[in-house]
Length: 109
Image (cartoon, rainbow, N blue to C red):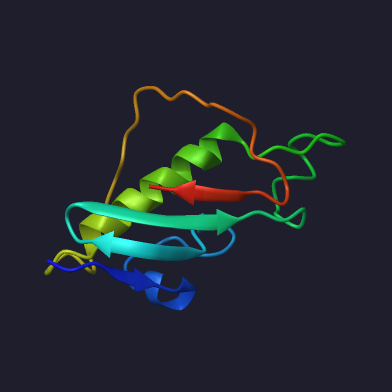
C-alpha cells in the first residue's frame, strides 16, 4: 500500500482528539497499518508552557507520549474499516532524550 500525507484538517478524520489536546500538526507520510511520521510545531503560545515551568518552559513528557500515541492511532485508523473506531494506547515506560522547548519542531514517528 502506498503512503500519503494528511494536513491538520484531514488528520482529524482519523484522530478523535481536538484542540487543545491534538498533539499533531501534520502527517508527512502514513502507510496504513505499518507506520506514520509527522510533527508538532511548538510555540510559546502552547497552553502548557506557562505552567510547565514558569521561566523555563518545557513540553511535559506525558504530552510527548500522547503525541506518539496519537501518531500510532493514525497508522491504525487509516486502515480500511478503522476510520471511526475508538482506540486506546498503553505505554509501560519511556525515555526522554532532551527537553522540548518553545520554537522546537517535535518530529513524531
